[in-house]
Image 1 (cartoon, rainbow, N blue to C red):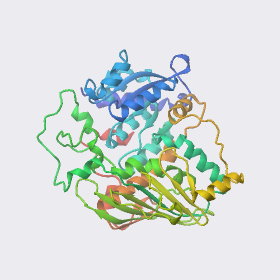
Image 2: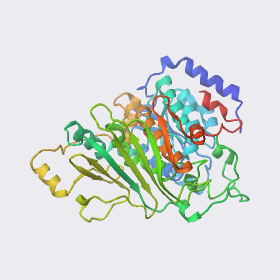
Image 3: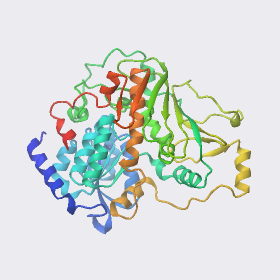
Length: 449
């Protein structure tokens, strides 16, 4: 089904014109619950919908998935038999925008942007899985839209509401984490595309499942034939659709480092190692370096990112030959080395004997209180009861750092980035990839919202 653009745009701009009367914190649902529409209900979306429903703070009022009615979405459909279901998010908003307070976006990276932009233009709060979008420019526009439409936003890096978040903040405030000069971050498990080898082009000739709306799945992306190597879940390894291992895991490993060390955007990005570089998919392994200037009293620092099954970072002597957990990070300050894993896992000071002594001396905070989880935090923010912890103003620069790393994985070499003009200054192709190719015909309007 295709909705006439003029009709949909009239609804969008009507909502924008009255945005002053729409304010974050208004919950229209029964009993103060947030009326929630969920876009993307299979795979990761299945768990996400359940997590929001389990908070007791949401009414699930709409389910939308390009493959609704398939085996992949059946678990959620069974749980919510009376909820209205759609394959096209544009149709969902056209039919029931007035019944929706907030939208959960759990679709492939390349489609985060159009769904979130339309939702925000209609005055809906949005929770978007990580990273925020596939390109630097899309993220820029999403940050601007969140500010313009005054909606609550949250990126789905769940650890940003967990122990690591509150610990990192408390340890920095207490002066335990200070003078950080280097970080090694890594994710060295096999990824789906590692088994494909040297890909020569996009697959063709496969029969599309009857339940799947492939046109909506493609969204703003350029036309490609349906293939199982794109859908389900395999999209992540393709430049046209995903952000690879770094976009997938960087937001779970580097989020607190990025926020509390006030990194912003890097001044340069260098591909130190690329194994199996390819025109279509992400490398089999990569090591990417990010340089950051001094920030106030914090010294200049850099981050090395390692991915690939055998591409481990150097192991610090303080780790004393222990097994390296996956994924994880080592944080080097002038006085202390910290070891951490991902998501909400707390940091450790190594060697552990040093941390034990500091704990026994009462020198480091260890009680971080009882806090809402990431899903509760978003819904409470929609009601005006809390501030979202990973809003676009915080998650946006982190996501932009991630996609800059993805560009480096694609083009190689060293990229010089002007933090003021937000442009790559020494590589024309890399500079063009900040925005990427124009939207597919018929999908241009989202960039104008």
